[in-house]
Image (cartoon, rainbow, N blue to C red):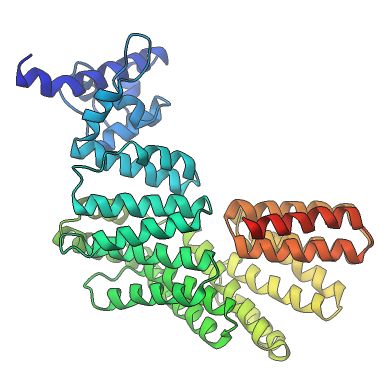
Length: 447
């Protein structure tokens, strides 16, 4: 076999797989191509004349109901992938980057086990230091999702070691530090977590890059840590810093400008994939719902910090904030304030007002589907139902709220509400049910 024939082999394998999958789905080349590609491009791929780009491979795999790794793995006659061929393919830099991308998508979707399996296929021998850092970072993220905290810590510290190399871009250092902070916070080591987050901010301050989306995340994480340390003044300050940054994202024009600036930065330092990603975002409207969701949840945290800090002044603060609704606040931000007012009234044995405000918060949060505000509103309505002897409704509300907190991955909030519900059931004489939830609390804390 000539060198040219050998080099084109992966292209023929991918093309044959795409053609077979397309025919199995009874799609024409035109149907598979639209709207992103031309028919001639699909035809050339299927004949093995060209190798599809990473973006094209991901799009075509999704349309054919396959993963990109399924398209890349060479098959034997009995349908089993050749590990040797796959190993050879994984040495190609483009395929390694694709594997990283697939693993990150899996992690974003909460599929840590799948991400770990994808990452384990990557041979580490010939990886560049940047790739070594990225591999360990993604492994640390996967271990964190699986609550394997020691493994997560070791992987992230190894990633940080690789990231010290001058050839590793600063954005990788930022991601590693932020994930280290999340790992320390998950193990209740909030002082170490704050140290990692602060190093993030220091690096951002000394860098040309200024990504407000990332900064909002870091400030919010720091606010949560200060809450857990009962340093409420600092918590409010961090949440307000994050909320202030949302003002920079108030209009489409500002967003476009922000994405364009981030795109230019990544281009200048050679991070072309990140540049392309932000360039595409610059060309599209930012997801309005996601932006409002983030702002609403920030106001929820600010209100919660105020409630914990000073119960006497909390009601006046919340009512003053609620009066600003006429100034064009979004419904989720209003719902976050209303929810905290409902909690204040319930804590002061004013169930009627609590129910009224909780119902308003519930309605305001519904268009945004699953958020911490929707979850805690459901839980609060469950608590109110129990006070009014509507136990069946209360149980259903609690079940919905607890399940939502678990799906959102909000471990601390879930633990707190499990304790509250177990205590509520015990106080109501429902000992057997209470015992089930106390067991969940113990299992959760052990895990």
